[in-house]
Length: 100
Image 1 (tube, rainbow, N blue to C red):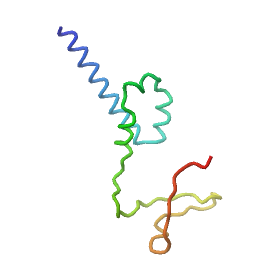
Image 2 (cartoon, rainbow, N blue to C red):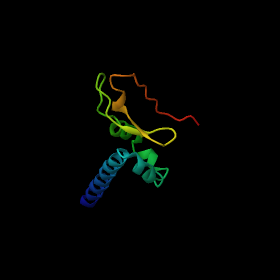
Image 3 (cartoon, one colour):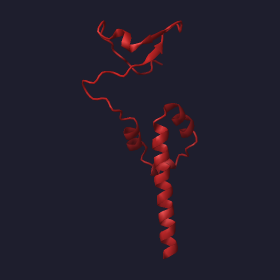
């Protein structure tokens, strides 16, 4: 019976460690894609990916908070634009998505 308990505890520790590793990877989008490419299909039955994703990507902004500063290249890639350069001059609408 002690052997079964040790096996169960070992499996539980490995499972929790794997969940913690996935949570850490989900916070880094470029690494996330490379890791998820190697996750076998049956893992989706035993790992709560949706809940982990919501925790990892929740963010810390609340309604009324200022948007964090960032910089993006222009469409023609000849210059860069900072979000802060619009503060107090023009409203800014950010749309994240795919048009393909």
